[in-house]
Amino acid sequence: MHAARNISLCTKDCLCLFVCPTGATDTETGQIDFDRCLDGCRLCVDACPSHALYLVMDNYPEPKRKSAQIAKALQVLMESKSAQETVASSLALEAGTDARKLLAKAFAYSNRILSEDCGREAGFMLPQSAVVRDFLVGLLDQPFDEAFPADAVRELLELI
Amino acid sequence: MSDAVDMAPAALSAVCSNLSKACAKQLRKREADLFKSLSDYFNSKVIRVADADLNQLEEIAKQELAKNYPSLMVIAEEAVDRGTQRALTWGKKVTSIHTSLLARYQKQKDALLENNNLYVCEACGFIAVAAAVPDLCPICKAPAARFTKIS
Ligand code: SF4
Ligand code: SF4
Image (cartoon, rainbow over all chains, first blue to last red; front, side, top):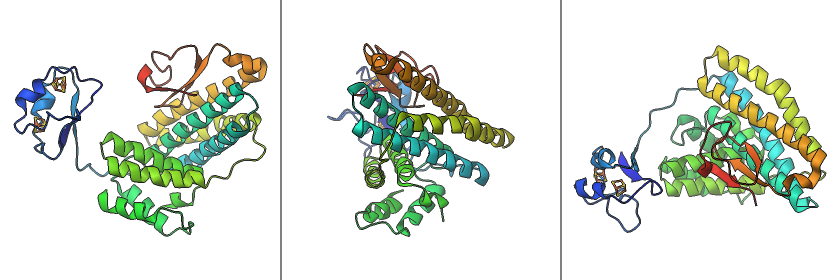
């Protein structure tokens, strides 16, 4: 567990600089130096008057499994959102007017967000979960073409 | 094995773009970039629709509102799955706003956007047609900073 700073909330009052025992709060990037942050210390989080500091976990509990029936139905809805995204992004490429193009882009963008939300509720919420690991392992078995970034999948399985 | 791997490329891309965002929120930049590269790969595999038109969007959205949302809501309520109920509540509203936006566009055509911009809420997908960015998302209450202007 380490501290992190939301730069857009930080008012530069510098109380975190006073309390940090390792100097991890004082960096040229504005972000906490994660390597120097002491696991579970949280002194700066409690000291910050702007609620700009928070804790990021290294390990998360395994999420509660979704019912298979709900996960399946959400995947169906997700595919439907993605189908709309595809129609809209195709439309954006060939739209005759700027307004039409913008509208198509907005529909593509919105449907991507809706699709992602269905995906989260279908179980793809936490990258470190067993559902995501199964998914990544499954991707490696699929017959994708040679452009498929299999190395990225293997590295992810190492990292998460 | 996960049956999700059989989904269409656009859906696989969305699974990966969502996981990329989830890694970015944990400030795991490398993992976020890797999921992003997967998402980009699947995006490049999406087969464009040759004769795409706005009616197709309306048709699919209406189908979802008549079938997918009501039936999913029943099983989500039975299972007391609050997270899914939340996604369905927002998603249904956003989708019905899609259909009314399409209807408005059919009537007003490009004049709809004459003095307006399009903003999309990053949290729920709500599309705002407005001259300036909304203060608050009317669907999910996300603040103005979570809206993306379409350009
Ligand atoms: S205490 Fe909070 S507001 Fe002050 S410098 Fe640190 S992060 Fe910024
Ligand atoms: S949690 Fe403790 S060690 Fe880590 S940055 Fe904050 S004050 Fe420093």
